[in-house]
Picture 1 (spheres, rainbow, N blue to C red):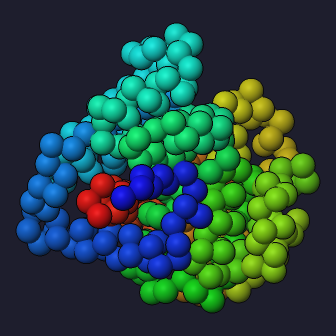
Picture 2 (cartoon, helix red, strand yellow; picture 1 turned 90 degrees about the vertical axis):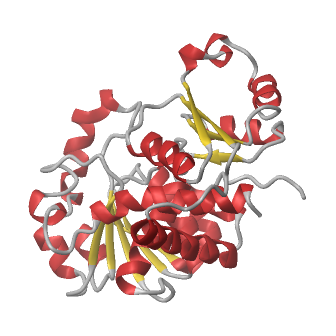
Length: 302
């Protein structure tokens, strides 16, 4: 069987994504009811390469492998030859001959693409500057648990056209929903993705307009990792795109709010929203664990 990688949501079919979602829900229930999953990934190892710092990603993947009976190995640039200039191709060839799967959290998306092209083992994109597909697995599972199928719904993305926004565009195509994006000029998502999505995605310049009658409102920090020196200049441009009670009031009365975290209260979202009754960010964060267990099983236990 040929190796499967997970670099964006488009590496799976819509049916496969629905299968992963259902497995995530079942694994979550199984852990709650039985306290364990058995050992479906016994003697399997996941190499975790981190070039970007992480809380949720490291916790969720490492604990996922432990709960599935496998082992996760943390690798930082200072711990490996990657940090000393070894070609990505060579590292991929070596690591994939030992590890059963490789998870990478890095800056340039070309890193995971190059790694996958030379790897004998599945490569998982745990975040690049362009995409964050693992977070979308958790977001879609969280929505399903609270509201059912995503098809036909309207999502408002408010803020930076960043990696999360790009992955929400992919999600609109894969999960069959309408996406309305509100961002400042000059901070739009990838143009080629907008073109691919066609009428599924709409770009507006007003946060309240984006949220109007939305079923789900989503945002992210205004300056991602590696953009810290732009924090002050971005703040002025993004202030009109804060998710606050006025913006949420434009959405449907039963609309949910999501944020991939970490969050800056008083910047991209107010405390009354993220800590309010419409927020499901803590379920969303927990579901990184369960959705990624489902993904690991999909890639390694087929």
